Image (cartoon, rainbow, N blue to C red; front, side, top):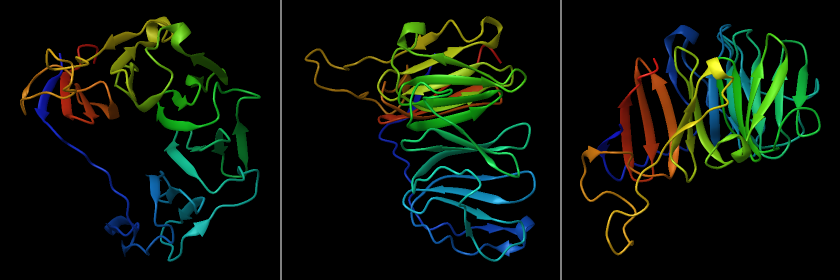
Length: 251
């Protein structure tokens, strides 16, 4: 069961990337992109930044200048979104309308609707294995077999549009949907059976109020989700009406 911990919680950060990370030599140089959509620091210490309008940026470990990534098979678009490093050390980056590109240290491999994905727009990704949310549904990539499996409403999802993804320690995949609450599926059944948790659509008898009246209480705060995190035995969900958390019974 989810618990409401605070209503009207909105966390959106759009800023110049300017951080202080001592392990990378102290202050980092300001990123030339003003709209950072995702960021990851890989195991080599390089910092990768996905941006809207400026493409994909990379700050080498100990470097003093951000490098805009081009060529070597990288997708030709100024808009990148989801970004992660997988267990093999590869960098995955999603785009607005061209699918996913994967960097193996030498070149980029492209995945799109023609060879792997159910949709071209990538909203979110998570690793363990690699899962990606596209404009046409969810897809899971198994690196051991280099195979893809797609999941849509036909496979039990409440909708095809996912806002955020997270794996827990046992490999259970948790998905926060844009308008349909939260769902989870386990690796033991190949992510084929989805357990869906939803909030009330209305909180009053006249069906006008779409958020809880109280700042604290029981239940998922809203079906309109923005982010999800499965960590240390708990599931945290950010919605447009506040933050909810629940004990992870599968972890």
